[in-house]
Length: 144
Image (cartoon, rainbow, N blue to C red):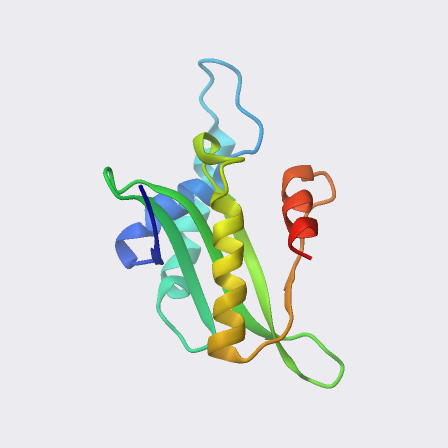
């Protein structure tokens, strides 16, 4: 079974690995030095961002049996309108390759949207998606 929960400091490396995971698999047997550098970059950037704050949060989905983190999302409140209104912004969503197309991403985004509305009173939630990320675009379009 999978458990959705807030991220903890101990989740730092698994989150970094998910965020750095390429969407396309590397060649069989090849070590991806670029991905390793990206993991280390995330490990340096994440500690301050994982600390709980009133305007920012990370949530993860973990396998209850193994404890493995299989998905992560980051949500923050930002000023994104000319009038200075604060809105919720999904900064990252990452799902491990073995769990893609299984509803993990939908569950994470749904949780983030509910959090933004119930805790921050944000009617709108925004996200940026790379144009060539068809699965993510399909997810967000299906959610409205």
